Image (cartoon, rainbow, N blue to C red):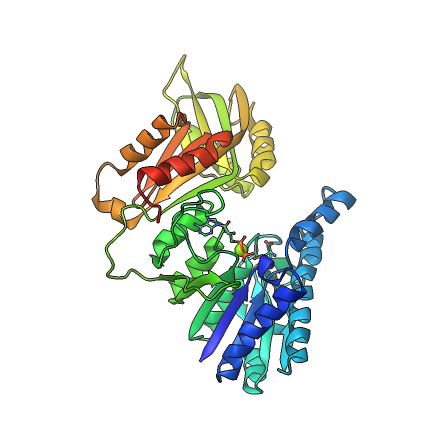
Length: 403
Ligand code: ADP
Ligand code: ASP
Ligand code: MG
């Protein structure tokens, strides 16, 4: 078997954990498997590097940031190969250049385009464990890129797809995918399995246990994932194509505090206004999420939408640049202390009353809803950020998701 095993930051945070991971990989190797290991930077190293950059130059270019951040993963793979070697097992570490892992040009949010697998295959054939940097790639300028925070999961899935691996295991600091973040909702229950679609919604809505693009890629290439703990041997959660299990009405609750609401006020109420507003934003690569258009008052209307925190400044600058020309709005307002709380479940498609039950739980908990959006298998509300944990807990209780 060819097995891809990915370990996150906490799983390689110190010497003891590095040896723990090395031993788990060696076990598979000694059972005759080919083993590819993907690692994140140790502990909170990526945050440490970002703070260092900010201290030197708060407006550092994305290119230099990526140059810096890729050192985190390079440290962990080299140390891991050394640890395996010290345990008597041949291992070789490789970074994105050595692989090579080709991505799009966008620093900070690159997408994997192609992976050269020849060197990896040769090393595996020579009975070495191959330890590869997660999160990073190279672009057409021969520069380092990164895939966005949490992107090592995507590296692992991309490698599993490119190598036609028999298994792709994502090891982390919790026992699997839970009905809610177990750090926020202590009674959350571990799921035995979950479909790609549900996992993709949860990951996109703030369940940081998997990078959303890793789930997208797993679905596209049919890579079955197992999410499990690096610290114990419990079974974990299988992420796969729809199974014949009964569809869960609600399989999980996700919360995302990385949200800013922007209201554009006093817009003319005529055709083309929304088009112009969102066209300007798209031209500046601002990804817009929830959108709300108010009813007309005094001949004008307001449009509110949400963006991630890092996009807020660009969004405001863009709107203000066009405020007196093509947009003709009277005012823009920014609300930073908001968050999104969502429920996800494939069973929602065929069951009425799920949204109502969620809103009732919020009402009982005294949480006001600012905005609502839905899809076939999801309901999302925008609320004041200070109520995030209370809301997640209340909704989790209302749907009896606890173990
Ligand atoms: P790693 O460094 O291993 O990639 P992450 O911090 O990226 O780990 O992801 C694991 C964390 O995801 C957990 O510690 C947990 O707090 C958080 N999390 C959020 N939502 C969920 C969920 N639904 N199930 C499990 N973990 C979740
Ligand atoms: N080290 C990177 C991060 O902290 C990538 C990852 O952990 O997946 O975002
Ligand atoms: Mg992660």
